[in-house]
Length: 329
Image (tube, rainbow, N blue to C red; front, top):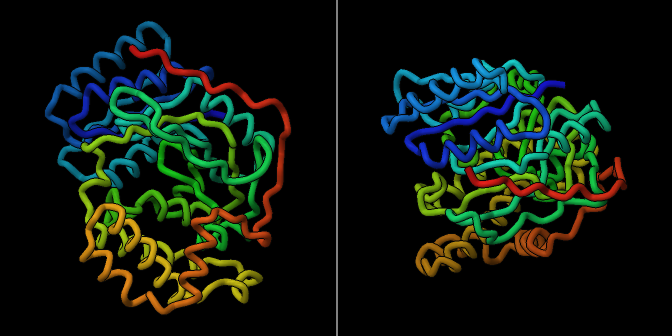
C-alpha cells in the first residue's frame, strides 16, 4: 500500500519546511507532493532545491507543482491529489505536521479493514511554538474501530462521527476522485467536511484512537477569516448534503432538517456568546429558542453521548502505539 502526502501552501515557507520534514521523516516511505498556490516568499526555490537533493541522494520523492495564479485551497488540494500516485492520500496544511509514525499506524489500521475509504486519527492542538493546547477527543471504543458506510452519514448528522481537520484524515484516492474532489465555493470554510461527506458514500470509515497529528492554532489560520454567520451558513449547507445521504433505515429516527437548522443556530449562538458578541448571539438564538427538539439535540451533542444506533466495530485491542514526537529541524 502506497501513501502520498499532499501539502498545500501559500506564502508560509517557515511553516512549510516543518510540514515537509514531518512527511519526509515518516517511518514508512511515502511520496510527497507540494502544491504551491503562487507564493512569492521563496517557496519555489526552496522546494525545487530540496526535490533535487532528494532525487540525487535517493532518500525520497518530492514533487513540486506551482499554480500559475492563486486558485485557493480547495483547488490546490484537487491538483495535489490528481498529481499523486499513491493509493491513499494524507493531506497536510502547511501550518500543520505529522508524528513520524502517523502513516505507519494508518497503514496498519487500513490492512485490518480494507473496505474503508477514509481514516481519521486524533490530533494535538498546538500553539505556534509547538506547545500543546488540547487534544481531540476519542470518537469511540478500542484502539482502532470502524463504522459501516450505512451508519456514517447518520452519525455525521448528529456529530457522533468527527473525522476532524485535514491533518487528521487520510482517504482512498479512487474514492476521492469519484466524489468529485473539494468544492472551491466553500474554500477553507467546511470544504474539508464537505469532502469527507462525499468520500464516505463509497465505503466504511476507520478511526484510530491515538494522537498522530499536530494542528497549529494561531491568528494566521484560514478559519479566522470567516464570520460566525458565514461559518454557520456553510455548516448548514453541509448538513443538508448529509441529510440527503442518510441510509434509509436511519431516516425514521433522524431529527428533521428544521430541527438540525435550529440546533446550529443555538450552537453558533453559544459560540458568539463565548466571543462576547452579544448582538450576534441574540440574533442566532431567537429563531430557535422555543424549539425543544433543537435544545435536546444540542444537549446530546455537547454531552458527547454516543448514539446507540451507530455501529462501532472494534478491530484491535493491541497496545496503544506511543505517538512519536517530531524533532524540530
